[in-house]
Amino acid sequence: MNEHLQDLSARLGVLNSESNYDPVKRIPLLTGLAWDLRHTDMQKSRPFAHEALALLEQQDNSRERTQCYATLAELYERQGDGHKALEFSQLAADLAEREGLEFFLPFVLSTQGGAKWRLGCLTDALACFRKQYRISLKLGDAANEAEALNNIALIHSEYGDSLTAKRAMKEALQMYIALDDRAGQALVMNNQAMIGVEAGSLSEALPLAQRALELARTSGHQPFQMTALDTLGLIYSGQGRYQQATSFFQDIIQLSEITGCLITKATSLLELGQILASQGHVPGALEHLHRALNFLKETNHKKRLYECHQALARIYETEGKLTESIYHLKLYYALKELIYYDKSGSRGQQLVMLQTGEQLPGITASASRPLQAILTICSNCKGVRDEKKKWHFLETYLSKYTGLRVSHGICPECMHHLYSDLLEGE
Image (cartoon, rainbow, N blue to C red):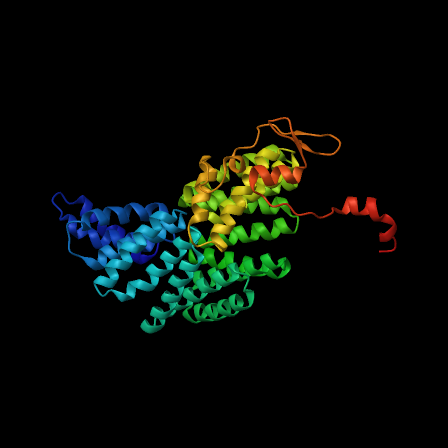
């Protein structure tokens, strides 16, 4: 604990020992402790912020209240609760704009953008980050300017624009180095490593992620430690070094128990499930993935949700459980389209109905009725028999009962079996 935190804690302890102390005197100490602990001990930070906010309900103190709202917004965003993060960040933004507390806005906009991102609204998130950048530039707030550049870079990376993302991250890193901000450097270097992971450049990503973890640890920033550990786990997993990868993901789960970060815990369970699946441990993989799915439903992190549904769909398909596979596949596609393509909300409505089993409006009953619990498949031609005892090609059945469009390819084994004479010499 640094000297400032020790001083705040000591002063709060003195107040608590007084028999007739003024509760109002606790407000600046509580808000200060909540703010300073939000990166190093999130579990302690949140109660301080809530207690201060309760005391502020009877006080006309816009600055302290805005700081409490902003602190809670960041804590909930880090812990994966996008809805609460959005609620508190909006309260903070409204109060800051109304009371002329413009210096709070860059921080609040960053949290607001992060919350919208978690909820799958990438366009809205990008708008928040751009506004954060403009206001930071106007205020001469270099730290928030660098953070905004990093956030904008991440959105561009999500849309596949790695060139713009790398350029913005490089500029953000230079700013953090000039500020001697180790946590900021850890954040950007980890994101640079993640771009390398997504591009398949694991050997280039590894030293970046290792340095990011070192910087995050020396800065005491728990959330950034977990993101760096996650990236290292992905790198080692991609290299087939599953034991080391598993160790990193287990470290994250332990840290998430301390910090209360459901999203990082869920992500680690998802990765562990995929490692187990790759090694043929199907029961263990399904257990981890379903645990991850339960946590992800609480946080409503759409990107991680669709990754989890995709992993489950693959496992169930491999196990020959088509009903379960198709269920998760439909949710995967609905979530992916909701994040990247459709902004009208219709896909969001479809997603809710898929999860609850309700019929979708505008779709006939025959097209949306549930699949049979057990599919009867011809052992020779692989045709499928429906509940009316009629036989269909598998493609026709899937199209009729799920709305999926089926395309065709040819696997390597069949390619070799059918066209071995043409492939000789290749």
